Structure formats: C-alpha cells, structure tokens
Image 1 (tube, rainbow, N blue to C red):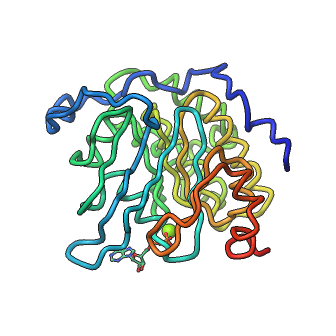
Image 2 (tube, rainbow, N blue to C red):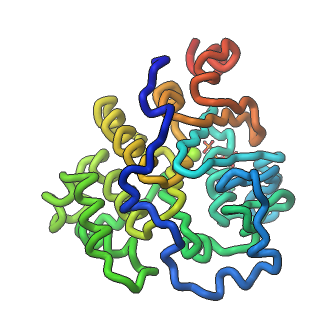
Length: 277
Ligand SMILES: Nc1ncnc2c1ncn2[C@@H]1O[C@H](COP(=O)(O)OP(=O)(O)O)[C@@H](O)[C@H]1O
Ligand SMILES: [Mg+2]
C-alpha cells in the first residue's frame, strides 16, 4: 500500500461542501471564552491537547491524551476495545468534563464550549451508536442535520446526494429500513448538512462488509479532499491507517503510538500488538 495516491497533495479542488466559515448562528457561542480570538499559530486545526478526565465523578479514563487533525487531513484513532477511543472523541466534542488539558479549534480555546456551540463553530460528530433517526425518512434525517442553519440547505443536500447517490434513490424511505452501510451514509450525510470544517466519525464502518467499508473510506477521502478535516475512530485498523495522514494508537487512555498512518503500518511493534502481525 506504499503508494496511496491520497496520501499526498490533498487538492482543494471542489470546496463546495467545505465551509470556510462556521455555518451556525449561535452568536453567544464564542463569548463564553475570554481568550477566544487569540489564535496560536503553528498548531493543528483541531487538537485535544493532553486531555485528562472521565465520566462524572468516576476515575479518569483519559490520561494526558492528545489527538489532533490538520485541515483537510484524515486522522485515525485505533486501539483495543475499551482503550478510550470513543471517550477521546466525546472529550474533543465537549461531551466530557476535562480535568486537565484543552481543546482548541483553529487556535481558539473551545474547552468550555457545549457540543452545540462546537457545532456552530464548524464541528460535526457522528457517534458510534444511535446516529440516525430510524423512524424518519432519509431526507428528514438530512434536514435534521441542518437544524442550526438558517440559510438555504438545498445545495448541501444535493452535494450529499451526489456523494451518496443511493440516498437520493431512498430519500423517501424510513432510514431504519436501510442496510447498515446505507445507514452510515445517512449518518455521515446528516453531519455534512451542517457544512462542517471538521467531521468526527466514531467507527463509521462498524458492522459493514469489507466492500462497503472500502466504498465508505473512498467517500471519506472525497470529503477530506474538499478541505474538511476528518477525525475518526476505526476498528478496521489496518485499512484505516492506509488512508490516514495521522494515526493514533490509544492504549488505556494514553497515547501509545503516534505517527503517520504509513509509519504506524510499518512499525513492527504496532503491527505485532495492534494489527495482528
Ligand atoms: N458513559 C460511560 N460512563 C462510564 N464509563 C464509561 C462510559 N463510556 C465508556 N466508559 C468506560 O470508559 C472506558 C473507555 O471506553 P470507550 O471510550 O468506549 O473505549 P473504546 O471506544 O476505545 O472501545 C471503558 O472502561 C468504559 O467502560
Ligand atoms: Mg468506542
């Protein structure tokens, strides 16, 4: 896999889905944070920096865990079950109170912002489970994704249908009637309806066949090429690292290994412990 054509020169040829400015209209979002506006240069576009914390008053799950993604790049989090991958995603999205560490988006400290305020700032999150409304139609799901927007959503919907043509065919069907792979397309499409700058995906290929997984990865690469940053958790570690600009191996809430996807795939220790040899 050494010559992955997507590894280099991520051209921003069609930036139509990408959003140069956050789409949300929650003006109050930025005012919660006094330091907003002061941008740190030379930082990744999105970073969960040395995050430590857990659920409620329970023990810490994350221990100085750092996850980052650059503009238009694909960062992949892998690691054993229970390593804290989903927890790290929730922490970056503001669903966990961090005891230590910070989350910064485009240099702005967003650590104290609610998830909704983060959506307004251009972040979208597709959780691991319950990521669609099964009793609603495909199109209604997409409309729900745009609930924060006050502008015309027709163009974005057309772009989502272009990315996932099967969804257009099935737009009047209840999302619950779709196959696993198609449901994941609905979930990703719904997230794209916010016109995000960063798309966070927790195990987008869970429970789908290898062919459907490849197909979904191709679409994700396509999304990244429009300039949207992708931060995703994947249990198909080998395949995911092949398309990753950056890879994170989490072990017990800590950064085990961090490198380019390519380097991690070539690392004997990573191969032996996490990629099945
Ligand atoms: N909502 C929760 N409340 C309390 N503990 C949780 C919750 N979700 C996950 N955990 C715990 O956090 C640890 C990491 O879980 P998780 O982030 O889901 O791992 P992964 O996604 O890597 O499989 C596990 O020990 C799990 O039991
Ligand atoms: Mg998980």
